[in-house]
Amino acid sequence: MRCAISSSAGQILARGRLLIQKDENGEQRLSFLSDRGKLITGGIIGEDGEISAASEELFRGFFTAWGVSGVTIIVSK
Image (cartoon, rainbow, N blue to C red):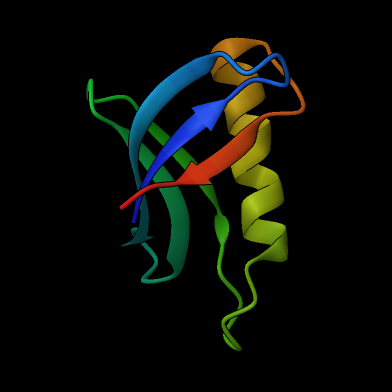
C-alpha cells in the first residue's frame, strides 16, 4: 500500500509503502519501506489479523528513525 509519513506539523518525512513481511521465524510483520530504501520494521501481526500491536511497534520505529512522535500515515493511490 503506497503511503506517506507526515509529521504533526504537516512535513512529509518519507514516501513509500506498507508491507507485510515474514520474519526468520515465519511470523508476519508490519513494515514500512521508503522510496529511498529505508526499511522500518514493525511488530508481529496477530494470528487473527490484528495489527494494533504491530502498528504501535512500527510507530516506535518511526520515532527512532526521525525523532518525531505524532506522525500520520497518509494513504495514497
